[in-house]
Image (cartoon, rainbow, N blue to C red):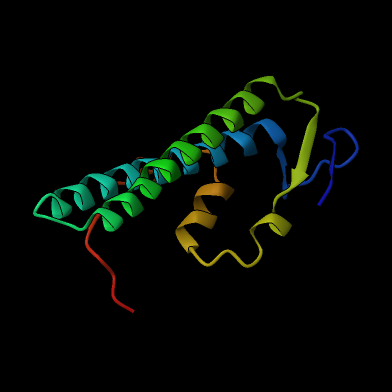
Length: 125
């Protein structure tokens, strides 16, 4: 996985670093929103008398939400300041991603509904 000037490697499978950063930032922001929703749901469930040790474990959701949001902010700033001359091959980055909709969102430039995702019903495997 290497970054290189666009003029050297023009290719349909190349993506400007700034655009890749913007897409990753949107994914992290959506994940942070889902995490915040889960935190509120868990807090509502715990308000009925959860043990102190379980409540302290819920703080991990808050920390996770803050980390995801912070990483999203950093990637947004990278996207704003990245040189337009640099790009990356995106396919090696997407190999092995288990979420097909995530792959689609990262491959395509248009805004996707998944970036405004909300927590939904549980999926049981």
